[in-house]
Length: 271
Image 1 (cartoon, rainbow, N blue to C red):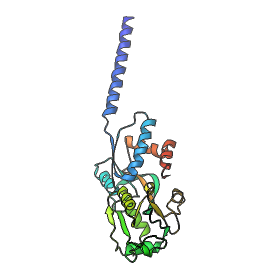
Image 2 (cartoon, helix red, strand yellow):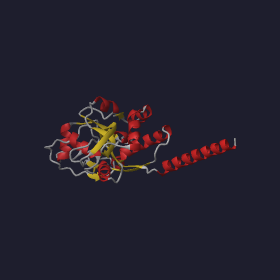
Image 3 (cartoon, helix red, strand yellow):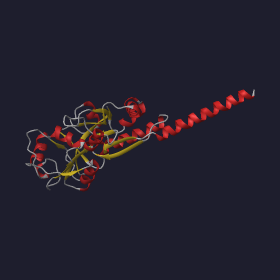
Image 4 (cartoon, helix red, strand yellow):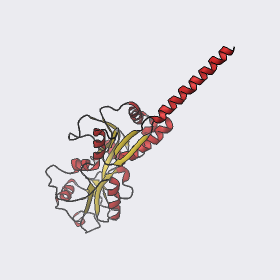
């Protein structure tokens, strides 16, 4: 009987040590680091919140914002485990990257709410970019006669790449000189504070601005989903090669879980 008690105590002790080691290992595991697009950072932060509440032993995450170009560079150089992007990969990106799409968004044309221009046509956009349209008095429906104050993003940002590829013809001369900002939230704030401002931002950030239709089509979630609005942007995560380990498990959950799909659908179209 005493021998059995010793065996039982030894088994309990071993189990306790094993559990303690496993717990310590889980807490000691390095966090999943992601950096890049502010827009995608916000979406992933929401997903991480629900992931950690619905999945046992979820890892820690460290997210930092910026822009798509920075996220791609960080992922390619191994500075971050993954880059947060607001566009698809393009040929000029570093080789060997893999995109895991999470959501579809839209790059919306915006003006100040005091200047609720109903629509901009393809030719009017070429005129603004090409320098033949410089005043709001040249745009039908504008309440202003002031010079247009364009504001955009640095060329490596996701929204800038989408804007250039969708709205600007290859043979349109680039004459305009928009104020170039690093973050889409800065563009939002600038246009919000500038009555003659004009810019482009992500669909999720248009709440304080007036959204301008393009060729008669609104930048709405419905039109993004049905494909009638052309300036669609992919929000996702890029990695060097396929994602692995804890990151792969999180991304699989984000793409397949009904909870994750509902989180994404709050502002976007699930990819």
